[in-house]
Length: 249
Ligand SMILES: NC(=O)c1ccc[n+]([C@@H]2O[C@H](COP(=O)([O-])OP(=O)(O)OC[C@H]3O[C@@H](n4cnc5c(N)ncnc54)[C@H](OP(=O)(O)O)[C@@H]3O)[C@@H](O)[C@H]2O)c1
Image (tube, rainbow, N blue to C red):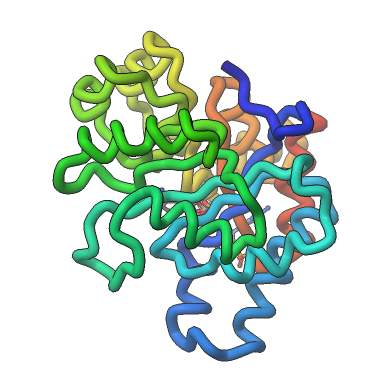
């Protein structure tokens, strides 16, 4: 099923608020200047034409996403968040997917989430998946899926419902044909995080030169051509723009 915004538009490549972006907040959570850096990334992306924003409970960046989308037509945006089952690596404020969804509504200033993912397959993730299905059935979220799940972990969820999305690390050159085949067979969309990891690879740079496009565009196009949806990010508006141009290649 192709993912769309509530208003029916196809979704673009995503702009992420994790990885290096989340560290800006974690280093000094109450620093307004640092919060503004995150708000500006999302605003820059929306101004360029991105309609797809990626966030997560553990990034602590949802309040900044909420500020960045203020005044925009909510139904034209597609917002993903991820629920962390386990609190082993960060203090969590929510304990159930429903509590987290409600916390997210407050932070984003919205009353629904477009895509709700289980961030990692920790603890009793099968029970969590059942809870997430219930959230969707109750209308709090539109689409549901997982992140960082291996095929054998997804197999355990399938009898309840097949996740629509698995967000995993994926990029040109990583070559995981079995993983690709599994997702294709079950019609699960792969969202690729860290799609630009090989950006300095000399072979990639040569391929991009030959194709007369930037290395980032080559990497993102390779994924889109293979039915994989990349989630990227940049502190710099020019780089967000360079990446977004992949939609016209
Ligand atoms: N589900 C998960 O467990 C998980 C894990 C990791 C990430 N994610 C999500 O995926 C998002 C993206 O991850 P990522 O940051 O690792 O992705 P990435 O897109 O592979 O890497 C971003 C890096 O590439 C640079 N860059 C961006 N656009 C560029 C361009 N056009 N040309 C050259 N360099 C460019 C950026 O540098 P500058 O900022 O200096 O421009 C930044 O260092 C995260 O924000 C998060 O939302 C999810």
